[in-house]
Amino acid sequence: MASASDKSKILIIGSTGYIGKSVVSASALLGHPTFALVRDLAPADPAKAKLLESFKDSGVTLVKGDLYDHESLVNAIKAVDVVISTVGALQIADQTNIIAAIKEAGNVKRFFPSEFGNDVDRVHAVEPAKSIFAVKASIRRAIEAEGIPYTYVVGAYFAGYYLPTLGQLAPPTDKIIILGDGNTPAVFVDEADYGTYTIKAADDPRTLNKVLYLRPAANTITKNELVSLYEKITGKKLERIYVTEEQLLKQIQESPIPVNIILSINHSVFIKGDHTNFKIEPSFGVEATELYPEVKYTTVEELIRRYTST
Image (cartoon, rainbow, N blue to C red; front, side, top):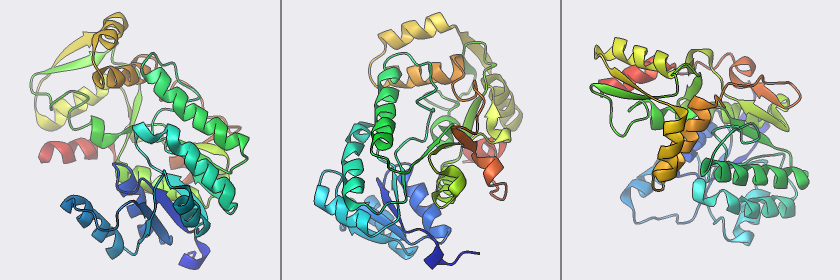
């Protein structure tokens, strides 16, 4: 097994965010010297202070810096080998600041921009998701234009966003909305597993300048299958209400932000099948569970049992 000195030093930008926490945790757990870029080392928010304390307890180095402070970014990046961005949706476009800092630092072996969703180069999205995906795609093009080595981690929903409610506002009790015919496979991955696969890829030559897809077999499932599994686990019988593509498109147009964004992403996944409607070709991509069979990922069934038992 590689010692810590053999493992890349990893900087996570957006470390206290939704997926950032899982990436930091995986990096520390897998023995990488781990650095978390933090705006405020002593935040007033008790939850954030507790999170930073837990980072330190697991051996993570907190680095004061900001996405909008070029000098602090360059200094933080110069101390590491790999940069992973997990910034939220509103800061995706501002990753050009990270690209500029990586370029100036000149030492980065790999950059992972904030992706963790649909493969934005292989989507059939309507607005407003279309524009959001286009921003992510423009960041990819900027990375490639600068010749920065990269890995894009994509391919699945965050399980914690979708599975507790099966994509509804609250956990279903008697009815469940199904988009389209419910037979289009989607992929769901636990946030901790997203973190593990991302870190596994950091030093792997097989993922260099590739898209890393997360398509665990047990977690590639249609909405109809998901509902049946939920019914089996909870003992509830749900009335299935099917929404046609035409009805969904009308809903997207009439809904306010952020509902229209969520609906349009769901259109891409459940109507167009954008998680699974293409073959992963070696020319552009690799699949995580094939590369790392030793990772015991959490299955959809285990996840639903977890969410319904609380």
